Length: 273
Ligand code: KIV
Image 1 (cartoon, rainbow, N blue to C red):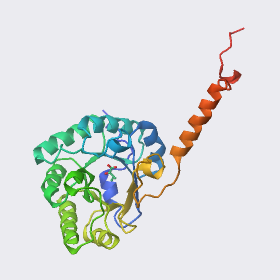
Image 2 (cartoon, rainbow, N blue to C red):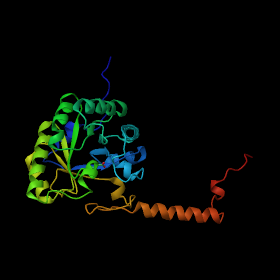
Image 3 (spheres, rainbow, N blue to C red):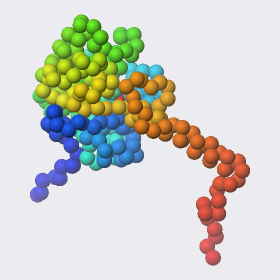
Image 4 (cartoon, rainbow, N blue to C red):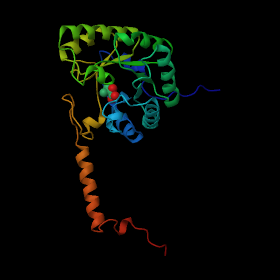
């Protein structure tokens, strides 16, 4: 019997080995068609729980469920070819205990076929990161601004401005990086600190609003494509205005339908002669 062929996707190990070499290119993806479009250009695709706000119109990511993440993880896996696919663990599915985190993470891996999970948290989650990593669940850490903590943090604001915050972030990065995470997302963190954290830990840092000093970069795709217009954080560069383009296309379609210019003869079935 021949060994099953492994998919050619990059693995968490490949991503980890990219520390100090080429910048790691990451974007979020939530659907099959988007994953197909982004995959050739990315090293890592994140099925982020930002989908709650971006796709479902939620005010925060707190209401996102494991079932939603699994369904979108499956969709992205159908479109991913070479990028390492990571699925976010939503709020409430991993904080209670390392055992609960393990059970839910295993569901995500088994039901989606993705390569790794991501969870938010610093030193308080390091034991869980170690528990999962030691038991076959690759973990992408996430420190700095942690959107799932919006209710205790009182909003979204960049971090690392005070010496106290800096100390906490140093402890978080060392704890999560040292516990076995294969890489760590640093969100909304001032540049000198993000640079320092990148030098401090042995695994790659992936920045979002954490300057060019990180080993890789990630953005929410809908932000950088101009599809999500509720608000645009300072750290987002808009590479397109797809929202405006969709709106223009819909307007043109509506005009064509109302004036009976669409459908034309080329879109119309004729009886077979
Ligand atoms: O949910 C998400 O999209 C994320 C990225 C912003 C890193 O966590």
